[in-house]
Image 1 (cartoon, rainbow, N blue to C red):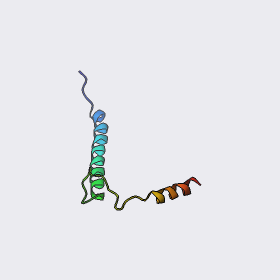
Image 2: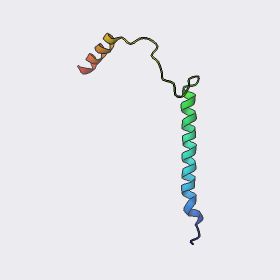
Image 3: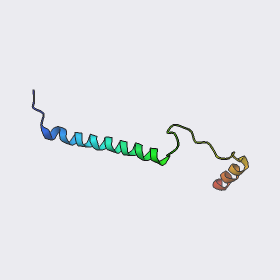
Length: 63
């Protein structure tokens, strides 16, 4: 059986640790961005949607 070289597993291990730290940072950052809200709750519109306003905006975009 071959002896596992130190340099062989050092670089992938460091990359994996950076990946784990990055994912933890991303999770904490996205959680703090919506502080006070649950992570999996849908956002509800604050006012009812106006169909005419949406239609007018789509017409402006189409022109």
